[in-house]
Length: 387
Ligand code: SAH
Ligand code: SF4
Image (cartoon, rainbow, N blue to C red; front, side, top):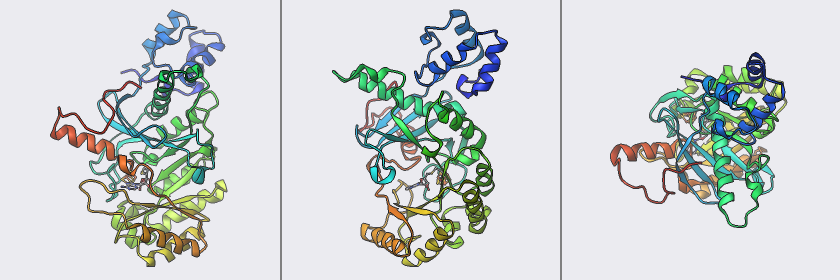
């Protein structure tokens, strides 16, 4: 099977084109087609000679992800379910900028992307881990989620009567923030993740600044140290969810492999190397980690790491017993943490109504198709949809 051209780096493409005795300017033409113009057909590359297009088609594939389901409405959180070439399903979530979180104008968007099909880490509360790990995404499948959403957006705009035709112009970009918080553990697919992020970060690729890319991990300590050695200034978020080993091990099996002492040392190293503030993600789950007694260890951990804390009320998952605490309990926890001098946000989860937490739409779709293969699904856009 051919590999995808978007798995190549600029350097490896340059090498291939020089072996093919192509003039140097070809590389920029092709990169322009692949990224700003988001081409998904060789034939679209109209300024390239037919012979070169045929040569490329024989050397690489040029895949795109198939949008099979989309939930959510314009101007709110929107969720995309993609079918990959082998039939596997992954999801991405498009979140309009929240000035309180990002300080950006409202026409800016964050995309939450997946890095694996399923997840091997089996956190007890998470839909992504429920059915185990199937495979890693290739770099182009990570990049393809951004290209797919931007292609879909350009089509939407072009279809609105009177909308500016610039919607199709190559420089029009929708997404300027990435959070690697979709399905999968990104640091367990480290090489593909880094390759994809470098392309998305490059001015000739996605043009998304490294400081606008947040990688979330359940705490793979050795990989955090490895990431600290990379030249890019990616932001790091840790899915903490428990501030003591007793609580954390109960809900996150990864804590037995990398307990808090080891995880916090690795975070400290990241902080030292990068000089960048880490974010601690803390889902509030009723009766598990939301007791007032949890505030003190959380505050001391955050203080030690100079980290801010994002509190996220739990999104319930069908088939799992966990619940979100009521609003006043969440607020009380946030207030107590703030009183301890810790910068924290209480994120009333966007997209709660559309199964926005990672892995939920895929799980629902797989379960529905297992039970009622031919039933139409209500409350969603008609499928299939071409991005
Ligand atoms: N594997 C990585 C990234 C993907 S999960 C990680 O664990 O960090 C992204 C975030 O969603 C994590 O903080 C995860 O703990 C959180 N999450 C998972 N299921 C959730 C749910 N049902 N409600 C709220 N957050 C959830
Ligand atoms: Fe995997 Fe992250 Fe879900 Fe844990 S929270 S199962 S690491 S995707």
